Image (cartoon, rainbow, N blue to C red; front, side, top):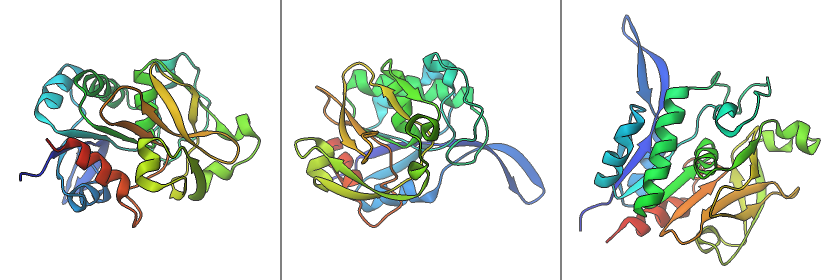
Length: 232
């Protein structure tokens, strides 16, 4: 049986090789390795015109919305918080925001399996009309979300719960989080202060967003669940 083709969004960064410095679409290798380990065939998606999003989705079996710089607060009606993003990668990237928002909407409309990771979960929520907390330390009065490892409680009836169980130790520091859930999204995992750590889109074959980075650790079950959902 052919491996499902899984598109992975990429970072838009200045990259250097030899004497050349050029704008490049780059991706941490952990995403592709996790997809391949789960039985999928990874392909990288450069952040081009949002009008190409539908063409990508029609040719893909699944999509991973990867992490990266924060989503521009202007997309959900907020003013910038004036604080650094969680990955330390600089300011907003409007071209990437537009492309990935369109990609998320196209995957939702086509019922194509989607795993939205860290920033990707924010993209999915904003694409569905939701909003974000722009500065978690200010909102919750502590900085525990900016440490890498923490425990989350998961709804056992959710797709995330069926993959990882009712509690999971996860890896992923973040400076922002879901404020208002987008249309059709439900919260399915929470930190100890009730900040939403995972979401799912009701009625969709597999549209899951997680605040952490499942591709970084040894537990690859969420990526496996994505690939399984992408099989015929």
